[in-house]
Length: 567
Image (cartoon, rainbow, N blue to C red; front, side, top):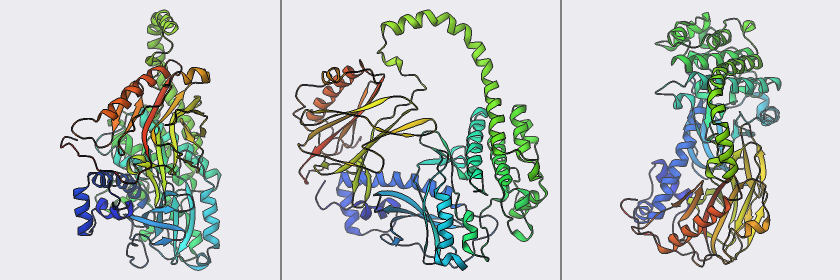
């Protein structure tokens, strides 16, 4: 990578397919590293755009009121947040990729397309609503970090969670009944949590349920419609999707009624109906037709029977879709009923498997006794992701692939995901030959834990000497420091990796990452062989080992690698 390579901000137009300077295009065409960085940015923007589409809540009832607004250019500051990309617009809001300079991380900012009225202009009402939204802290929600006013337009600042919404995930095939039931139960618990805190969503649809990278369902867009009271007496709700609209919200003249907790239960039932049948309960050829069905509460339940949906799950769906809000169950009751349904569905599996388990018990016990450190101890249900390294820059947080080469003084933080409750340590073998044993800080989630080093919202600094840095997350707590030190060479490897390559370890696989020439350089192969031996030694002491190895350089100038046409 040359010293005059452009920054991520300068590469963003190319990644987004926007007009760019001819000189920039010529540089990227000639620089394999920058070309790889544009591809990485494009992938990141695709994830963010997926989230933005989900959060846009484009209203099919009527367009949002208010003046037409042009997208803001990059480097614009909205409050303290710096715009670094435009992720699109919906009926309610424009969505931007932003950097929070205080936390030095990327977030998503949703800026209303309508001007605030009355008391919201002084920010008091907005601040009150913002505090309420920010207090919502549940693993099934996307966090709201901040709320404010920019040029009389309210905005929300949310965490960025890569994933796809249900509409995108199941666009070509339906989920299995058990998966549809699980997602519904998870969302019911989330709604119960929000309702207990006085917050109603008002637009629960497949587009507003995101499945994140770990398979967890997340309810998104407790958005601008929730803040209606803050906008003054003339504000109108702009959310709502006609095909999923509760009857009590489908008022005459295309207007929306106020959502109540039971409205969210209807939306949950409508989403379950869609997952089970492939169609929305009020599907129509026109918006007016869908609205007419919604006002009358006319749901045709025939598709539930023709899809052979289990009776108990079918009954749960029907109860949630009751036309009378008072007849719908509470979210906690929905979750409990679905969990009973799922538990009963597992009984026959347990009974059927009992004989096989008994027949294999003696052989399995003997095998485990004689090979307790085998790779097969890693259950298919055991989660242990590869470590992720994020690098802090003045222009935001970069992934390792987009930040190499790392240099002395760079600030990083490391994390990985692991099954809930499992014990783990991080081993850091540095170029000086020192082994550091670090206890990660644990962020507890619903099904997995996130292990962070040094701690959330903190970073550590790369110190000299330069060389190959080796980081391992090891699951288990039955070890001694002396045993671990014996797993590593007495002297660190004398070779450093090329500046734009790194290696990863998961289970028994060692993988070379980054751009490669036609022939793999000897220094990479030497590090690979050393890594395989270290991994083999560590697996004698731990249930599971994952790792990442990266180059640490002091020089700011490196030649770009020659890329093979096949890579």
